[in-house]
Length: 164
Image (cartoon, rainbow, N blue to C red; front, top):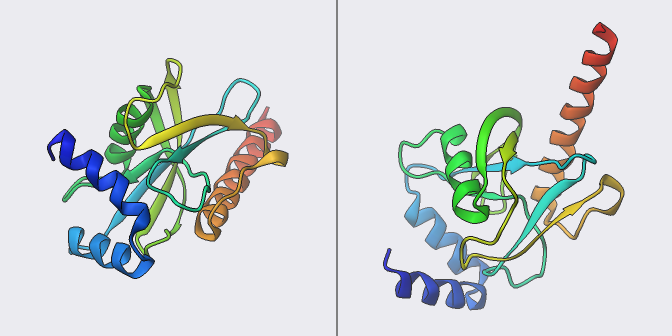
């Protein structure tokens, strides 16, 4: 999509009613929309969240986005993290799956990254690491996915400690 059209769409998107946005997503992803997002943690275990420019409710989300036609979610999350934050993903592991805000199938991956995050697209307004006890405002579907993914990370950490 040309840059000017993309920027115009980002400005228009938040002003559209939810039903119109929902219909557009379904039309764009007629094959069944899939989304892939990343849990990226810093050295202190805090999780990276982003604020998207096209959200009108001020809620935060995980880095990621929709999969292109015939794109695997594991590849989509690598592409999206690079496009949004300029980070190089060195490894991913599926943590959780569920439904996103538009009824799409959503996949949450633990992502190992190198580099420092920076806003690399007009789609983002900000990024920030949050501790588990200070999570930002999230949509209900995102909150459920984050909760499931963090529980899975906890279970994995307990198993690793028990084995040693």
